[in-house]
Image: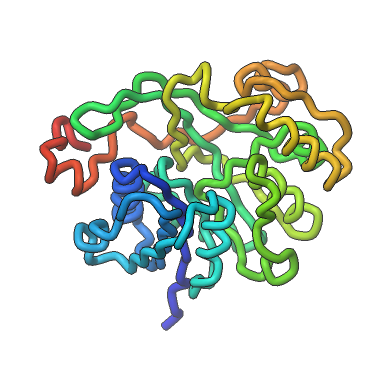
Length: 279
């Protein structure tokens, strides 16, 4: 009898318990259940109640002694990995039920695989996020083009732990663009594959403002990334404006749509009476 591979899911979190609970619910709903879930609380509000709400899950909560930000938190999570593979996820994103099973199947001939995503705007209704707008984010994987504009989303990516044995941990100097930096480091030495299925959901509120953060604050990190990887002059533009660039639009790709648009209601929301129109 073949042993099922263990997937270690690393989730940094900071003061987003309701959203985190939805992510944990989405992990509980996975068709592939052999998961080690590592939640690294970056010195925010307590999240230990999730272990009581989801006792069936192999869920570990690590509390950072001070707020060192998300890249440090991910590296702390790496120290606890027991799995045959590592999966990354932000605390406010979601994975559809077939996601882990599909990623595991796709990684057989690769070292890192990543999904397409649906990006959704939302309102919070009785503690539950409900989509108001959504659009597909699916682009061909082209390493040369990714050096100009990265279409790699880290949430839901699956990879072999050996990557860190060669590359080391995530670069804490890259507070912004840590994921682009990680992708470039990996793609230079390992086999990377995009999976044409929108099995991860990337959440945002107020799309006009938050997808690129404060551009002035991010510019030094973009320059640092460019210097590290020899990328040349990179544009500082709003995320949605970059998507309209001809070279980016030319990479748009077909993908399999899996989400019915319904919310993922956590056990925490149900306790608070938020199970209206539950999936």
